Length: 362
Image 1 (tube, one colour):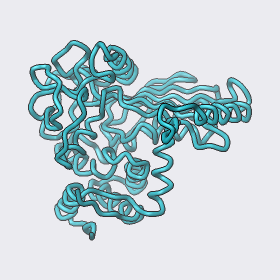
Image 2 (image 1 turned 30 degrees about the horizontal axis):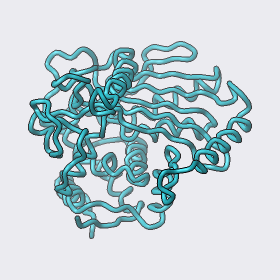
Image 3 (image 1 turned 180 degrees about the vertical axis):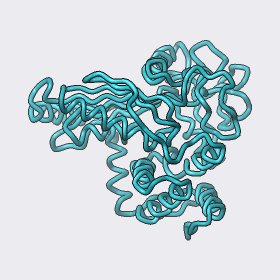
Image 4 (image 1 turned 120 degrees about the horizontal axis):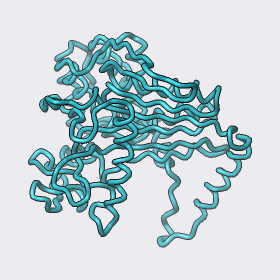
């Protein structure tokens, strides 16, 4: 498939202009842009600028508030609940993570649940905010119900990603950032654009049969939990997804399970919601609350080196440290630019024409 490469600066300016056209205050536009661009830079193409038109459609349906009053509505010294006022999750989530970090700076740990929010980009962005402060960061969100629990043929859970980020010494942070489904919906969207089949075990059709058709969700099928089926551990993926849903939504007062509002604007939210918007959950823990930070980072470096030196089945392959591929993508793309496939470029230029901003020239 044809792709075009753009500089980070060009995509950053384009994205910021889109958010300003939505009516976002300049600071919020800059922040939302930074979250989206971090995804493209880290090679997570499904969650970057390709999502822009989706945010615009939700805003047009008045499901995203461009000027939210994001606020803490309940708190203790180490915990808080934040109401995102239907704002962009790209703005609400960093606000909440900052609250968690501020609490951790004083008390050693901070935990923040969020309700009334929207899609927050990649979980890794928010968890890495804590790493910058020599803290361990935790970030998770629930999402549109697209995943069938083990044995089910009904969409009850989202892809519900979770991220844990740990500061290292001479190496990049260890970042475990993953969906709790067998694959994120964005991976299916990438396959759709490329007109390619998806691997077995990612999705099932409306009758509960395994399918390799990337369009299966549109036909009434569902994604599968991490593990794909019971024999391969799908009950574990289901359990992880349930944990995310409970921490992000049952705890905060957001919608959970099948009541989570869909990301796509053509589907209406539940007529009988059990909460407000999407939910997130964040944690920050000071490393020196457990041992001197320098000691921890020295030993995490040692951990990394030992795992990197592991004997492998294929001598041409090395053990990958969580977060390592994304870090490599970021170093390379900051220099050589960010590639976008042709369907994404066409979609963004249609959006530019609609909003009256400068197109992406190819």
